[in-house]
Structure formats: C-alpha cells, structure tokens
Image (tube, rainbow, N blue to C red):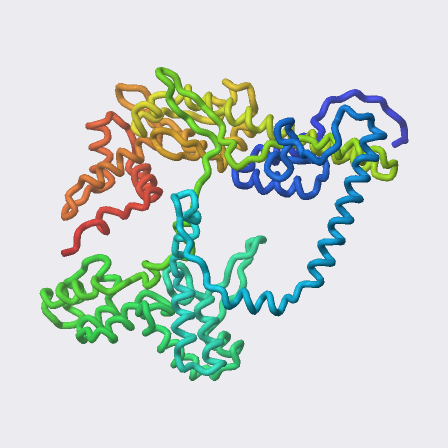
Length: 503
C-alpha cells in the first residue's frame, strides 16, 4: 500500500442549480407553477410581471415623469423637484386631515341613509364564486348539534374528540395511524378519550349513545353492526331484525337465508322480509356529507387540444400565468451601489434561469402532447374505445428525450380534449392481445367490461368467466379471468354474487 497521485479523465452528469430548477419546474402542474412564480416574485426584486408591475408604454406613460430625451443630470434634478412638490402637497393634506372633526364626521355618516344601488348589467354583479353556498361537512353538522345540546363543558369536550376521530363513513375510528417509517401509532380506546377530556368513563358511554342518535342516526358508531343496531332500535324494528343484525350480517351478505332461518327458528319468508327492512337502513351515515366542497374543486388543464380542419392543434394554457421579465431600470439603479452589486447580480442570474426554465417547460409539454396526439389520433376522433397501447418509451424515442423526462411531463398534467379532460398519463396503456385485429389498450378493455356489466341482467349478473367469453366472442379480446377480476376491482365494481339484485 502506498500513497500516490493519479490524473484521470472521466465524464459524469453534474446536477447544477439550473438543471435542478428545470427538473423541479417540469413536474409542477399549472396551479403549482403559479405558486412558484408568485414565490419567486416576492423574493427576487429584479423579477417583474405584467400583473404586478406592468411594463411602461408610450401611450400610458406617467405625465409627471421627466422626459426621456433630457440628459440624465437634468432628469435627476427634475425628479427631485417633483418629489419635493409631492412632499409639500402631502404635508398640506396631512394638516387638513388633522383639522377634521372625525367624531362629527362619523356621526353624520351613520345617520345617512344608504342610497339604492342599481345594477346596470352582469359586469357589475359580484363574481359567481361569492354566491355559491358551501356544503356543510359532517363534522360541522355534528358540532352544531353538540353546541345546541345540554352537555356540560367536559362532555362537550369529549364529544368534540369523538367527532375529530370519525372516518369518511361516519364511524368512530380509534385505530392507530401509519407513520412515514412504516410503524403504526398505538390504538386508543373510548376510555382514553374520556381521560383526555377529564370525563368519567361511565358518562362517556352515555354521551356516545346520545351522539349516535343525532342526525344522521348511526353516526359515531364503532362498526356497521352497531350502526344498524342504533337505527333499528330508534325506528322500532322487530326482534327478528335485531337478531339478524346482531348475529347474521355475514349470512345476509351471502344471502344464506336457510342458515338464518334454522338458527332463529323462524320461517324463511320472515327472514327475507326482515332482510328487506334491514336493507332500508343507512350503512354509511356520512353518505350525504363531504369533507371536500365539490364546488371548489377544479382542474386547470395545462394544454388544450383542438381541431382545425383535418389537423389537431396543441395550445398551452397560459391563462393566469404572469409574463415574467427583468426590471432593467431597477437593476441598473441597484447595480450602481457597490454594496448591492453582488446581491443583484445573483438575483439577475436567478431570474434569467427561471424565465428560461419556464419557457423550456412550456415547449417540452407541447412537444410531448403533440406526440401523444399523433399516436392516439383515433382516440381524439372516435373516443375511448379506439385508444391504442402506448408506453413511455414510444414517446421518448419520438421526441428524443429520456423516459424519466416523459414521466415527469405527464404526471399531474391535464389536457383538455373534445373527448373530455384527461391526465396525460391516461394515454399510456399496456397492450391486450386480440385474435384477429391489432392489440387493444388496457383502458379500452376496462371500458368494454364496464359496458357489459352496465347492460347485464341485474337478477342474473355476469360472472368473470362469462365476461371473458363475451369479450373474446364480440371483440376478439383474449384476456384471463383473473385480469377481468383485477380490472373490475379497479373500476370499483363488485363481484357477480354481490351485484345480484336481492329483492
């Protein structure tokens, strides 16, 4: 072993700050890009946009500004005189304001009647977003009932803790949550909530019982059986129905009426009638409530695909994006200060990098979208059933980019087409073999399965094997039964035994 020096020449990729910024901007969607631009505008003084600091024009120039054809020394003097005049006028106005009797002014203003406002047209009306009512969430609905109840302070605190632990179904979920490292937090109990609210555990059960009878009935229950039991007792169901809820929900799901009849020693007809009544109960108390306001959900497309005669045109969506530029006048003034020269120089470089990265992002998205439109032309003309198999490599080889770049471009980016609004990743599908024609995209197979299930006899639904046979007979699609089951689960469709109409 010895210490020695070696001279070696090698090539490797260096992630410069410019490259890191370009990659980060490439994977941002439209709304995230707006936030990024706003953040940069706040932190970079030499960066400006038409929205906050529009460029001066010759037709709307400030009449008080000194003319540009005057030498610099005279323009500086004129500017100082103008500023002095403005300061004198401001001092005079401040003196007048100080002499105003504000108490008398406010008293006279409060006695004045509001003038009737007449609206001349739609342009004077407030935006439609201000007239939309926000949907009430289940948490707000329950908190309103708790505040209007006769609970004590400790009971009300306990009720708020219960409401804070409800899941999306409206059930009380006391199980631990999963951490980022994969471990789980410990489960909690009703006694733990009562202890945190400094409430007696025996009183906690009574408060929970009252909350379960609030609107909607059955909320704050710990499982489906308790939810149905609370509703059945409140609505006055019969003993047979209560017994089925307590002991035979699994048999009701399997429609095993004989087992229920033998255990309860009642006729099968009575079991079926009881199941009909149980079916009327609400199994998901939070069904009519949502934690997300549907009116406020909006997807902003990054690109638009429109048809112009026989060709398709791809246009980027620049609505809401500021046109960035460098404020040269401010930069020149600040560069004269030797203490700020280094700082402004760095900000100028950052502004140039940002402008270039945004322009490069726009061009890349348009190139990738144009390639997708070219390869999926039949989809844009005829619909989802004509979607072709396509992978990232197909687009990457055409546009001359790496597959990882195509993945960043298509992730969380949306395109507005005549067929609807789609994520760019939607057009990438694996191939399913056909017996005669060319391969078909997996998304088209999913839609074919959905159409078959929608048109089936609800009293005799199609099994997965029957769907396989129909696809091969009608469409020539060769697919395995387990693949049909997987696509059916992705579409959120139950198995044939659970799709069968009960009554």
